[in-house]
Length: 158
Image 1 (cartoon, rainbow, N blue to C red):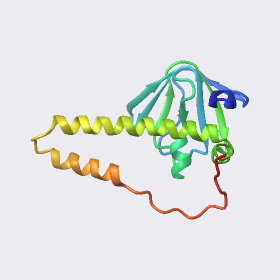
Image 2: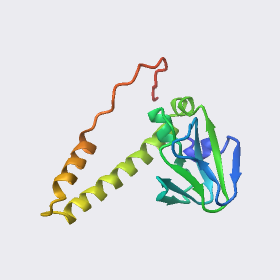
Image 3: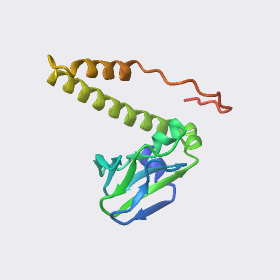
């Protein structure tokens, strides 16, 4: 079975020089980018929230899954080469390996966020901020997605 990077390596690539915004927060986003080479930073409200040079990192996936505009900006730190996936919902629906790759990346992010929030909660134990942190943790841990309109496409994994 092919790996995710082997699957996407069969698709066309594009290269951006350092300092280029490849995705812009609050702008329409109808594609997913897969980092193959180079380094990028992710900015939310002009604050850097992540930096990566990991081949296989995905950008634009939140927009695809949530059906909205880009949730963050992505800027190249060095020259970077990407695979551009147009019609990403179809791509991920047709590739169980790619869909699993996406799910694993999202699970890692959620786990890191949960560990961070628990750490913050332990640091503020006994302080006035604890109620706010408990409330945030409760919402994040138990939030259910809003129901969406049914789609005509059925997603099946082999």
